[in-house]
Image 1 (cartoon, rainbow, N blue to C red):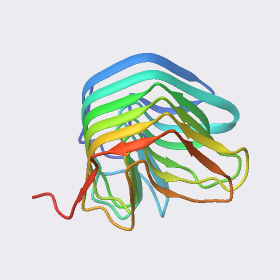
Image 2: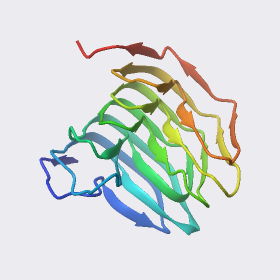
Image 3: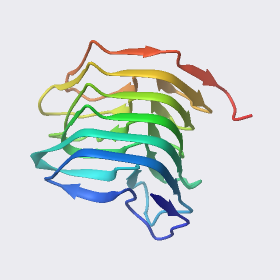
Length: 212
C-alpha cells in the first residue's frame, strides 16, 4: 500500500473514515504514506495511519481485532495544523475496542501534536471510549510530537465509561525530536474518565534529540 504526494486530503489510510464497523483478520506489509499537505482549516485535527484515519461515532463500539502491520513508513506534512500520525490508527473520535493488533518495524514522523506507534489520539471529548488488549508495538521509531507514546500518543475523554489497556507492550521503540510528554506506553492521559493500565510493559525504549 502506497499513498503519496496528495493535496486537499483530510483522511488517509487503507480506510479513511469508518463509522459503526468492524475490521478483523487483516495483515498489511510494506506500507508507505507520504503527504504534502492537508485540506484542513484552523486547528482541525487530522488523523492518519496505515489502517484507518478516523474512527468516528459514539452510538456503536467500533471493533478492530487481529490486525497486524509491518514494514511501515509514515511521513506527515510540515504544518501548523494538528496532525495525528500513527503506525495503525490516527484518531478515535468515538468508541473503539482493539484486540490482538500489532505494529512492527515502523517509522512514523508527524507535526506537531500527537504521535503514536499504534494509535495517535483518543479525542478528549464526551462519550469517548477505548479498550485495547493483547496488542504491541516493536522495532519502531517515532519522530516529532508533543504527546508521543509507543502505543498511544494522547489518551483523552472527559465523560463516559472507564477505559482499559491490558496485556499490551512495546519493545525497542526510539523517540526522536519528541518533547513535553513521551512514554513507552502512553505519551499523555487527560480528562476526568479513569484510564486503567493493567499488565502492560515497555522494554528498551530510548529517546534521541535529533535524527542524525
